[in-house]
Amino acid sequence: MSRRSIDVELLCDICSQNFDLTLCRPKVLPCGHTICKRCLHNPALEKKCPTCRKDLTVGPEDHPDNVFIIRMIESDASPPCKVPRKENAKLQQLQRGLDLGRNLVQQLQQMVPMAVAALNRQMESWAAQVRQLEEAVEREAAGGEEANSQELTTEQLELMAKLEDSVRLLTNDKCSVVAEGGECTWRASVQPGQFDNILHLLLLQLRADGPLEKVRISKACHDGCWCFQ
Image (cartoon, rainbow, N blue to C red; front, side):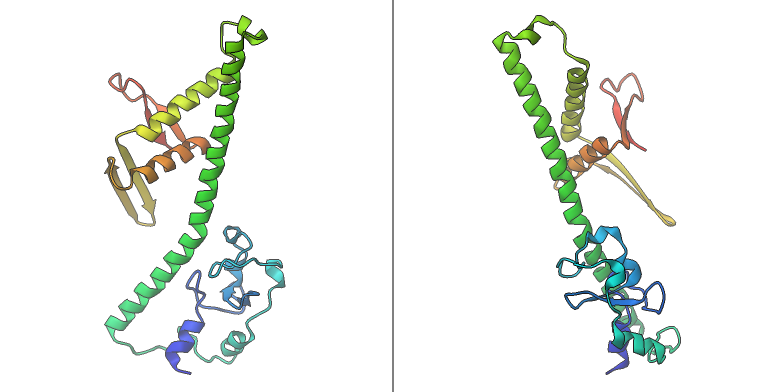
């Protein structure tokens, strides 16, 4: 086996960290894939293999070690940090890009299903509240007991306000975004375009979760603006 192939096998496909005998201990999943112990305890996995999405039928502590990799580590076969490799700069750059790409795809495979599930829950919640309003309209039109009251209940008023805010978020024409990570900051002022639906859904989810609050920044801002905190 070449030194290059051994080096790749000693990296966790999820976090791209070197396997070791402690936190990053290599663990074999029922489907045959191997990830480190730390990634196996990540709740974002949702008890599924991050590579093939097959169910994990046992707990994190019950998965066996990858004996082959353990033996290589114990025999000091090829830890990259101990045996420097001589490679040209182009190959190193390509390998780094490959590692980053794999890490990105693995994270997206975990995050996209979770985001879709959250949006589906939000849609079902709004659908249920719309059905409640439909029933209230039918009762009012039929002239039932509630028809004697000329005012909406507090709950109905709050729901109407939430609906109005949500519709405005889905139809806003500008969104300012600031993302911070490490020593870098990304800023963008986004207007409707190819990805406006994604941004609108994100704003609606942030509103439902609570971090997005409406604030008034000037008299010219008649309907108020939204701020993510």
